[in-house]
Image (cartoon, rainbow, N blue to C red; front, top):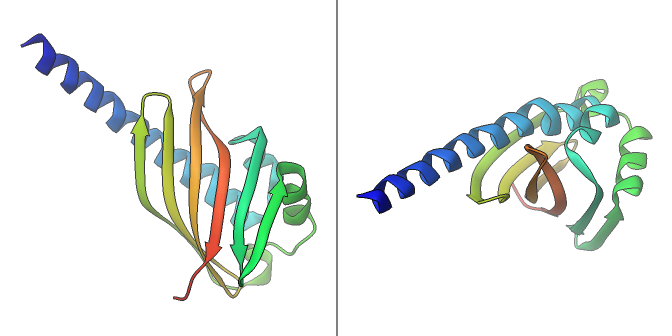
Length: 136
């Protein structure tokens, strides 16, 4: 009976963590990208975050500083008036780590992204971002 209770507790914690990650994605990640607000993005991106993937078939690799510089120096999706939509596809949590699969439509791109999270000081932070552009 104790084993069942322990499993149930862990599942409930995972559920709460999944909800917390969903909230972080909506309130900071998608909002920060949409508005081009690096201060909002910095609230959920760990300073050592690296970004990898491919865009239009070309390799994509950036440090966090390079990525944020790009966000700062481009017109935000909000300012451009072009479509933007962030969608959470799935979230998997294991103890203090998690992976979220999201889809981001912005400008003329459709990105599938895998975002790695780590719970640091009781806050879920993105520690790695992998992207690829996909057909609609």
